[in-house]
Amino acid sequence: MKSKLTNNQILLNEIIKQDFIENGKYSTEDLFFEFFSAEHTLKKYDLSYEEIERGIKGAGLDGGCDSIFLFLNGTLITDDDFDISTFPKDKRLELFILQSKNTTTFKEDSIMKWKTISNNLLKFSNQRNDYKNRYNEDVLNSFDLFKSTYIDLMRSKSKVQLSINFIYITKGIEIHPNVNAQANELKKQIKELYPNSNVTTTVEFVGADKIMSLLSVPKTEEFSLKLAEPPIAIDSKKDYIGLVNLFDYYKFITDKDGELIKHIFESNVRDYQGSVTVNYKIQETLKERNGEDFWWFNNGVTIIASEAIQATGKELIITDPEIVNGLQTSTEIFNYFKNIKDEFHDDKRRVLVRLIVPENDVSRDKIILATNSQTNIPNASLRTTDSIHRQIELYLKTKGLYYDRRKNYYKNMGKKPNDIISVSFLAQCLMSILIQKPDVARARPSSLLSDDVSYKALYLQNHNLSTYYNAAYIGKKVEDFIKKNKDYSPSERGDISFYVLFVVCATLVGKIKINSEDLIKININNIDDTVLNIHTDMVYKYYKELGGNNKIAKGTMLIEKLKTSFQFINPLV
Image (tube, rainbow, N blue to C red):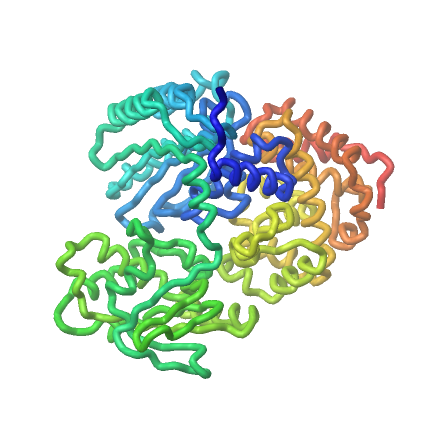
């Protein structure tokens, strides 16, 4: 006899159905559930929609790993190059493996698959090629990335805290004792593979009740900041300057688990610089508890917010705070209290805090630029404060698209994933179409804004906003078409998308070297499923002939093959 659904299960079914329709990217509700469950289960990491989608690996031969995410000190690590020296000496590496089943039960089989894949791919002595026919390329790449990152960290002689986390997500309520027994055996197995005391393993079951509790977390956040003294109120109590006890500031920037709330630092254009002179000096100042106040020797932090209210004489309620200057100071304060004993939490020293509620986005960007101009900053960090990006955001909004110049701003406003254009996605589209380098767009998505020559050509020398709209619109059209095709794995979709974008635009303008004027003239209404299908098939054919893997997509062979073999058929300008 089939048991009745609980209220939470009924509500969750309706929410998933509605979100599946609104998302519009997935061919089945089961596939959408993989995205939905990863989004909410890892909510604390404030991942963008693109980052979530890149983590999804389920497409057959996944070994029970529907999604895999790797974080270093809360920062998502992808297949892009990254420099571990920019992270602090104490490092926290977190591997998350998710199994998402759109069912109302938890079964032993899922845990058993994890036991098998762990034995196969978490052993350093095992070779990737031994399992190339057993697991898909996405899964193999993810485990390779984890192992190479862990080895690099150990070689750097850093203090590394590793956590391997398995999360089994369904709409279930009860967990059978046999399933729990399998979970305990999995944890024991990982302990045997990684006997180091700095390695922990968790197996978490997330059911309907837990998912509903995650869904109830408000997207607009209010933070309480306790002050050491009543603040100085400026502009009719809109902006404030005040002193905050170090431990109260530590509590302000950490969550209930004592971890740094990374997303409130998104607007700080300099990431934490790790072991550099300025941070050594901050560390030494914090350690010297000799009666001299901390704020005497430190410039403090600057916070911008959408609203700030003085709740009491010594407390501010801040809505959506963003720490735009003071990441180094904040991180050193976090590290200091994370490592000292409880008896030092009565530290009476203070840090200077400036709280500003900007009138508009222009003011906001000026504040970010001004407060981060004191030291040498990589050019890419300040790109989105350029006026062209504000103009793109405003123009795309009139067309029903949302340029996410501030990471997750429109996601938190409840806009559909299909309507959000990230900064990196637009840059990838422009690089693929206007510079004819889909290989670079695929290989280095996070670094496209760093190159001064490319940036100048794509943004500073082009002020026709229709260029950006057409690139974003066609890019989304191609991405959505390929995503709905069940014949391609997640890895293959990512590998061919920007190549398909290039050849579609080349066909529509009738030449390979496409300029901004050509792109503007494209009639986007001519891009239908027939056009997309022809060009996707062509790209995929050459891609597979050359080897059909990440290496091919990130190299020059495929784009050269397309350029030399491409024949134009009835250009539709």
